[in-house]
Image (cartoon, rainbow, N blue to C red; front, side, top):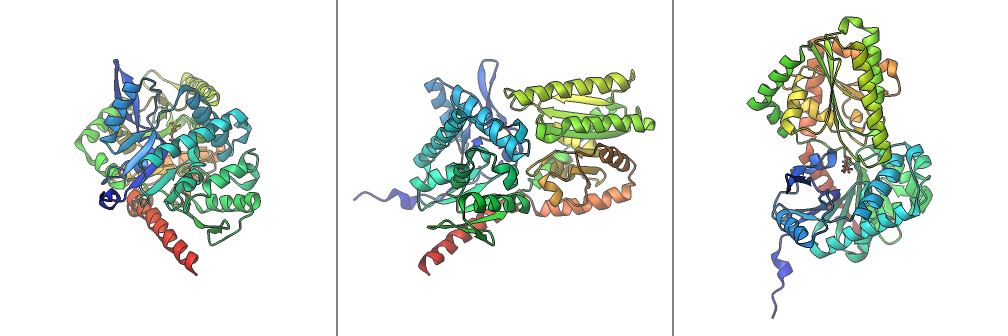
Length: 481
Ligand code: G6P
């Protein structure tokens, strides 16, 4: 008799997201891996490596050659990852197109930027199906599948059809817009139905969850009680889980000799007394032009800060094949050029602008030396940069200026909160931050550190996982009563 091999395996957690936490890059004719950008990849980096867990996603590059694909598969399998290869066409229509020119702008309240094209939608459906097919090959019935983000909204229902008994969690890392905005999408009902295949759906904030429930109610006709939705044949739960960071990792990096050395070098090179920091991916949701305008107005209004303050602005390249991102790049280049052109002296540039990505040690040195962090998105699901800044301020000085439109503002109430459309308020808040007594800085920082240390990424993962098991138990008891 054949042994039942399924009894021998350990149940695993399979993370699925559009992008793997590493991306392939061609370097001097050779392929190597670099860490991926964005909150999701940075945030979950410490989870998938445990036991026999697995992360499934796109390795960030088109690879057509089959033997090369096989090499990549072997290499990644050894690191608890499994690639889904996307063709040129799929990248254009699924990734750049539907994900980043339809869903991304709509969900960030930039619906004037959204395009609605049937062809892009069809490829979005096909690629979600492709992820489903890959998963079906590796998933065992008692595994837990955790799907992430807006690129894979249809995947939970596709999986439910193929693996009816499986445990499926879904987490959305970007905002969920109000019904009035969401309903503009021609495929609004299909998108919601896709998500409803999950057992548990998570958002960063209570408001995102409320907006989602309202859309489900009005577009699909399912009401909810305390976050529970009954679809007629199953029940699922919707809840909010604000994502944390790997606090210790940021704290320890900031403590290292290497980072202290770098900070010293940067400070010496910068001459200026006060350093204001901004770090984001190049994205219109991040409010970079508005922030630059505020800094320009600050220099105009407070000439006593000339030569005394420098804005260190790190912009990480992102989605540069998408038109709106190209246009934004030009706008930012022009603004920085104008401001530096108007205010620079021989030994002082008001803005030090870097358009590239940097390793963790450099970021950590930037965080350490920043007297003020300006995190002013127009809209952001959570924003982890502001949390990383707080975790890196070991001496507890430093001031965080944070947009009300970032999910993180719901937790970090000791930050100086601003509305990114109110340039005047940003200018005055920057002045307040730069003149804040150290004692007060420390009080605020200490509170924020305590909460971020406690509600870290490990806490987030276990909250979500515990709730998911609870849903499975509840479903069973509902089925038997
Ligand atoms: C945000 C999204 C992620 C995405 C990341 C980077 O954090 O929530 O899903 O991976 O941006 O964007 P990219 O398009 O490069 O994957």
